[in-house]
Each structure stands twice: as structure tokens, then as C-alpha cells.
Image (cartoon, rainbow, N blue to C red; front, side):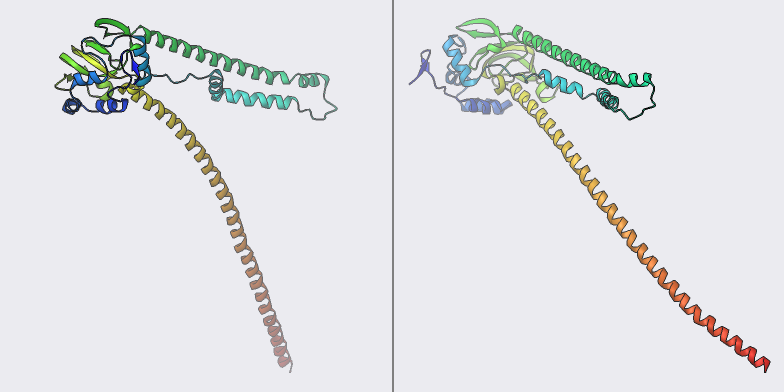
Length: 349
């Protein structure tokens, strides 16, 4: 059987079981810990001591990092310089200038045949490309400067953020001594001391507390302070602030496995999904517009054909009625003429 620092390499509780344990609040959390044999039994499963803490050996620390993860939430990858250049090119003013520059360049190379043009006008047309090229150069300069400023600001922000995280220390017990370590070095199984004003860097279960009250508004949105204790509500979560009292807890989840890490991961995934949905909606809108244009053209053609057919029918029927009316009028006129001649003959007689 493999051993790490004189103890078994297999822990008595898995990462999945620790996650399920931290999902319970209030009396449910107390009952869940009692089902696992109590807080001291949980410490035994994690091979830690409520009073001595972790041994502090390098092998033990590395094994815990490999098994339960480190207390670091990986940031979103920074945007590349080319991505910032592309975003700078999306400005409406720059797009208008780009189109104007291309049109100016195109017109400068177009030379209509005009023999009577004066010499000065020919020289101006020969140097007409300078204006379009100057606009393009100005656009390129603006885009590069904007992208460089955004890139430098993002690098400075990330450097400042890393410096703040590196300077953030927390009190833990290792080898029976209280020591201040960086938040990123906290491991599952550490015995951490919490006090008034602390921002909790990891999830844990309380071993003991003294009038401990925590502000969980960053997670739940409730402004009321929640009383914490081994017999009341033993679960304390990362990202919450200690408002009153003090206590001691055993760390059960760090990094992306902690409550704050899960929320940050979901937020990052939600942002990516939202961007993908926006792109998908834009594509669908373009397709719908194209289909509407096509259907509109087809309807217009059908309406034109439909309007032409009745007009043709009307012309045909009008011609028929005219011919019929002319045919009816001609015999009547001839008969009336014959009748008039007959009356004249009778009068002569």
C-alpha cells in the first residue's frame, strides 16, 4: 500500500463527498457531519489534527494539491493583441473612414479619356491617390495606438491583481504552530483560524467558534448576518466576510472546487454562452432578412403577373364589347337609311 509521509495515500473521504457535504446548511449540515462521525472523524479522514494541523512536509502538500486541487482560480485568458486590433476596427467612425479611403483610392486610379483637360488638372489627378492613402494611414495609426493602450492596461491590471493576491495572507496551524501563509498555498485539511474582518479564502467546517457571525450577502444576497457554530451552522464558505467573533475551521474545498470558485466558473461559462447565443441570433436574423427579401421579390413578381393578367383580360373584353357594339350599330344605321328612302318614295307618289 502506497504511503505519503508515513500515512496511507488514499484519503478516507473523496472530493465528491466533500462537495456533497458542503451543500448542506444549518441543522442539515450538523446532521450530515454527525453522519460522518463528527468533525474530529472528518479530520481523521483528511489525515489532519484539529490542534496540530498538517505536518507541513513537501510531499504531503504536493499530494494534497494533486488530489484536491490548489487554492487558485485560473483567470480568463487575456485577449491577444490581434484580438484588440480587431475590436478597435469595429468602431463606426473608423469604418466610415476606411470606406472613404477606399473610394478615394479607387477614384484616383480611374482616369477618363479627356484630351482637352489642362495640364494642371492632369497633375492633380496624378497625385489624387495621396488623400486616400493618408486616410488609411491615419486609421491604421489610430487602431494600433488604441489596441496598444488596451493591451498595456490589461497587463497592468493583471499584474496588480496578482500582486494583491500574493500579499493576501491567512492564519493556519501547521506542525502545531500558527503561521501566516499566502492564500494560494492553503490546502484541504489545513486548520485555519478565522477572526473579525477576514475574507474567507476557502470552504470549511467549523471545529470551534466564539460568537461567530458571517456576512453571506456576496453569495446569497441576504444582508442579515448568519450565526455560525459547530452546533448551529458549521459550514463556512469562501468569499464571505467574518463580521463578529472568531473560530477555527478545517478546510474542505479550495480553488475551483470551493463555492466562490464554482460561481466564478459558472459566470465565465455563462458569459461565453451568452456571446455564442448573440452571434447565433445575429446569424439567424441575417438569414431571416435574406428570406424575407427573397419572398418579397417573389410576391412582387407574382403580384405583377397577377395584375397583368386581369389588365389583359380587361383589354380583351373591352375590344370584344367594342366590336359587338360596332356590329350592332351598323345594321341599325342601314335599316334606318332604307326606311328613310322608303318614306321619300311614298311622298313622291
